[in-house]
Image 1: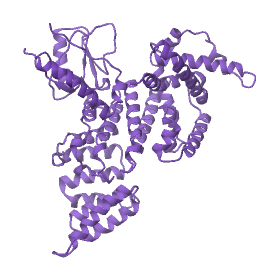
Image 2 (image 1 turned 120 degrees about the vertical axis):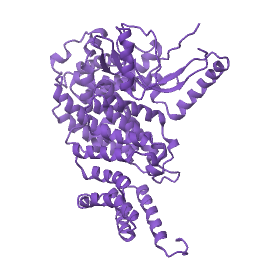
Image 3 (image 1 turned 180 degrees about the vertical axis):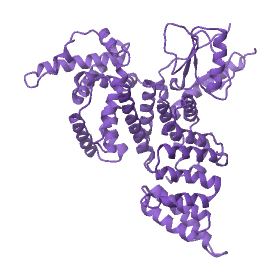
Image 4 (image 1 turned 90 degrees about the vertical axis):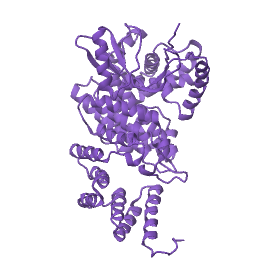
Length: 423
Length: 122
């Protein structure tokens, strides 16, 4: 590490707690962010000389708060002061402040900070962008790059999202147990969205978007440290780790998607897999199943299989069955059908997805999977129709290229014997 | 005299190393370990999974299982075991047996990511 890299690392890791506390204090997102920025500037001056403070987050909160209050005092003629009560303890020492930070306060601060980004009026992409900016502290440039949009467009998107959040009524009292659970589940869903935003990219952009996956894992770990006994948060963290463990094997050198069965399992990250498996193990002890745990358990069965043939498809079928009950969705049934095709054959699987046609009529994977089942049954003409539709619906060039591979195989197979493969 | 060297670091920092950075550090450590192994002076070396994967058994009466690492500071680290178990439940059973033999304090149960059994004769 270079001389100042430790400061960057400390500022990044203290950020959610510090901004969360400053937000509780000032009840205004812009003020809280600005206060944190100012505190960071002071840290960059002071820490190299004095060394790191015992508790960097507490230091940043105290300094940020004092600087902001000075600013407010200076401009008090233009701007009304925040409620007296909120700034009545101007002369607090670091210790007193640290005490106020102690206990469960900071947990709710961080949760609140994440929760305001999940405002239901905000479209998913804005929620994610806002969380990455405010909670993770990524720069607008970094976020724009990950979203593959221009910096100005992203700046505008975040500004708009912030304005909307500022107008929203965010309760600052300590949440009750029920409310805390609701917030946690909204926040978990958003963390999963961040991950998927990175995970669902094509091979050409996977490397650029991987930081989204890594940031999601970092946030999931943060949640897990705050809520150590929540089996669904263990499940979420495990799910992200087990999926991300396969990152290096998911695309070939040309950027084409490599399906699970065809992936080089030596490229899977065993460290992440071990951690994911350990977390599922922990979650299971609670006997409180949930969608993240089940999906993680499915990912774990893939991770545990040394070769595709070793995969326990029967168990995967059962797990998808449980997920269907918990979270009925045609996409879940579609995934289950893939397991069913391995256990009971393509005919049973095809029968299972037949009723989904209407609801998934614009879903790429539906036609890809349907085409594959038809192909296995030798119904090549129908398979071709399904694959054509899949290509038309493909979201990335990698997806389209993958289906084209199937089509090419169909073309070859349907030629009379002895004919040369297509040119 | 045998010595245990206990490794402390900021896990956020270590956790954010890229695969290449991680491999580079492991390679440098392997050189040191290799030298000790040749001299017959290296005992077991373990790399533990992150604290988020830890579970703690408080050896109260009855013992209490708590998710997460051992967080108190009033007790000190006095020893450790490495055991082979099918899953966390099995590991907790072993910890309960040990706890019954020696009540008070706590055991933190943490999965081992990498283990080098070492070469010191028993």
